[in-house]
Structure formats: C-alpha cells, structure tokens
Length: 629
Image (cartoon, rainbow, N blue to C red; front, side, top):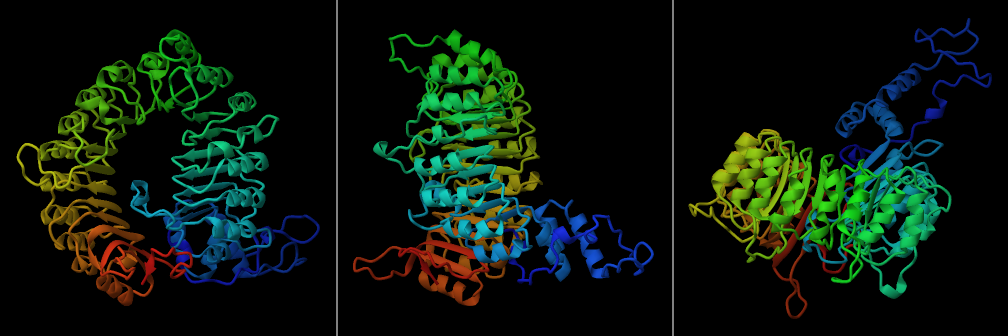
C-alpha cells in the first residue's frame, strides 16, 4: 500500500476521532485553551497539549489526499503516524503479497467505531499474466484480504481489484461484510461465476458501480444464474454497469427493466449477446447515458432476412446526444456504423479495439470525431486509417493500436508510416501503445520531437529483434530520442533490435521512468546495469526473452529494495544466481518457476523469476510449481 503500511507497527491510539472536541454530556462545545487555563472560568480542565495538537493535526491531514504526501507525513513521528492512520480514507496495495492482510487491517483499522478507510485498491498477479506468462493457479487469492477487511473496515464503500483470484464465496463475504458498499470494480480477475454476481446484485443494496473489465468468468451454459434479475426491484442507485467481458447469455428482459428503474445510470457496457435491436431498446430506456458499450453491434436476424435498418438505429443515437464515450462493437456489422454519426461530434472516447474494420470503414466515422481524446483501435485500419486519425483528432491524448494477429510472424497492417502521421497530427499526445511489425528510427525520433508531452510510450515490435526496416540498424537512436526529448516520461516499453547503447540512453535520460518493460532486447548484461544505476525512480521492471544472465541480475542488488517488483521470463538465469540474491537480500521475496527434468528433479535453469519486497515474508499459498528461495 505504497509506503505507509510498510513502516513499523504502532500501538493503537487511546483516542478516537469521535472524542475530538467533545466536552462532556451537556452538548456545549468546548474550546481548548492552549495556555493551559480552563475554559469558562476554570469550569472544565484544560485539554492535554498532546491531544490538542493531535486534533489539529487530524484536521490538517483531512486535506492531504496524495498518497506520497500522506506517507511522508506518517514518518515524521509516532503521533503523526497514528493521526495519519485515523484519517486515511483510501488504502492502496500495489502487491497483495507485499504486506499481510492482518497488518494492513491493524495499521488502518483502529478506533472504536472501526477504521476510517472507505476505499481499497488491491492488485495481485504480475502484469505479464495478461499475456498468459504467469501459470494458472499462481495465487493472488482475495480471500484472506476480505476476511481481514470485514471487521477492520465496516464502513468500506469502494473495492477495486486487479488481477486477483476471486471466488463466489469471496463475493458472498464482500456482500455480507460491507453493507455500505457502493462500488465494486474487478479488472482482469478470475475464479468467480454468475452465482457470485447474483449475490452482489441481491445483497449490496447501495451499489452504484459494478464494473467487470476483462475478467474471466467461470461458467458453463447449464450452470448459469440469472444474476441481472437479482438487483433490487425498486429504483436503484446504479450509475455504472459494465459486463461486456461476461461471455455467457443473460436475461435481457431483466436488464431492460433494470435500466428503466436506474435513473442515475450513466455508463452501460453490455456483452456480445446484445444485438442492435436490443441495444435500441436499452437506449430508449436510458437516454441519459454518457458511456455506452454496444455489445455485438449486429442484427439478430440472419443475413438476407431483413433486420433493423440503419436509419432506425441512427434515430436511437440521435436521441442520445449525451453520449461522449462509445465501446463494444464486438461482432460489428460495418453497415451499421453510420448509425453512430449523430454522436460522433461529442465523442471524447472511442474504443474500436474489438472492431475488425478497415480504413475505408473507419474514415467516415473518424472524420466526424474532432473532440476525441482517447482512441483504441485494431491494426486492421492500417496506416491509412491512422493518417485519417492524425488529420482529424488534433486533441488526441491517448492512442492504443492493437494487433488482430499477435503472433510474431504475422504481417501486421500498421508501420512507421502510421506512427509518424500520428506524431505530426496529434501533438498533444500523452500516451501511446503501438503494436506493429515494421518500424524505423526516423519515425520514433519524429514522435519524440512532435509529442514532447508523452508520459507513456509503449512500442511493441512483435517480431523478435527487428531492426530499422529501412536502414537495418538497431532501434537504439529512436528509443534514445524518446527518453531525451520526452521529459515527462514515466512508463516505457521497448522492443526490436536493441543493443546496450539504447539502455545506456535510457539510464542516462530516463530519470522519471517508473515502469519499464523489455522484450527481445539487449545484447549483454550491461543493459540491465545501465538501467539499475541510471533509472533512480524505477519501480517496476518486466523483462522477457532477453539475453540477461545472473551477472545482470546481481547488478541490481543495491536497487531492489527501492522497487516494487522485478519479473524476468525466458532469460538466462540460474538457480544459483537467484539463490545468491535471496541470501544477500533477506527482506526480499524471491520466487522462481523453472522447468522440471524428466525425473521431476529441480533444474538449474530458471524460466521465471518474480522478486518483490514484502513486510509479510514468503507467502504461504504458493503452488507446487513455485519455489520460494
């Protein structure tokens, strides 16, 4: 939870927030005399100076919202530590194994009326789990956290879980333990089914937000539960309902009725089982929507059998002018795309990352999206589609271009041409994720000069060790220009043919980089050494399929304590090198996952290394394929 929960344990304060400023049973407000004399002619004793100072301090800390500032305040002295705990509203745990649930509950759960925490953000598996590089069953179970938080934070209103394993029983305990729960968001989580969702819908009577984003729902067709119908039958408080990742069918009539009795609903994202005919019904029930996930965006009628006309669907969008964000389009029929024209002028966010559309199909849409600030799209639009984006969306701040085919030997439809066009037309760009097969240093250098406000630059050249497609040179100068010219850069992902020179640039100029991802990069262990010595704010380092050995790993010994984690996959690490790290840094947890020999014996070669700092020590739920050194 950033740094605050990682400090020394402190005994609970003898004073709760409810005691501050209360002056006996008369109900009369007592103003403390800081000189030590009684208030009201000596009728009451003076407040102890320490108590007065703590009351004042708590009032000041209420206005301190930045986690870094609160962490710094908690380190001043023991009384500040206690006051910060009593006024903490949000708890952030970036690695669920970095601190024990019990310790977090004790640290911020003091006071007779329960902890002041209202919001918990909890993250589990490493990010490479998104690419199936973390084995199934690795861990990150939310169960111990829910069990500890229930008694400690009874007034909890918001829970955000990312890459956690969540069971139906966990969801049941969440509904039971937090009667005031208003927001539940689960991103890239797994382990639960529609049974657990039904419990949340039925028991969380104050729920405003239920967002399920890129989760894996473990349901079979014959085990489905009608979870939508479990929401309260009276008017609900729902403001956001996102379930486009729930791939199983659901009760559409129940959803339509739910939308009709949710007057505050602003965000609705449905799954691919919703046709354009059904979408039109939902839009009629909720004209106030600002964020809409369209579902399949195709007709339920078979081709050639009629179905809704484009003009009918267009009329629905005409009546929904409040929409500023569109997503979905999971099985899009391009013939229906003109229906969204009426809302394009107001769109600030458009997500076509599931829409297999061509440049020809994209152009009439994107030409009308002049206010767009966020755009996600498949590479099927090609460089021509990106050129149209550049010509129209001058206010764009975030662009993500995903591959239709993510294999290394795929052709890919976008290249340096599209990237350079974006850099020339979208000069306010702050974040870009770009998958491609072909790139040049010139295009990357152009982006560094045209988009100096970049905070996130992630260039993923999918083929291994791909050089500049024109010169055949390594991509060193391109990435060097990014870290030199983009002074605000905090997140960087590199790929392509890179030598130690690129990492020397990154270490020398990437002083603000916190998150760094490397794939198929580097030519010696010096690359890692440059990063560890130069990137002084490096917090998360992810490495895959790179030629780094024990020597490169050991060059980071003086820096690992300042990092949240290091993940290395398919490098040249050995068991002996990882053991040396564990021996020399006993307060780090070193997890290794290696290939087994034919007779089941441990091999010297390490396939995966996950190294992280933890106050809790080695975890107790490691599966058999994980060895903790």
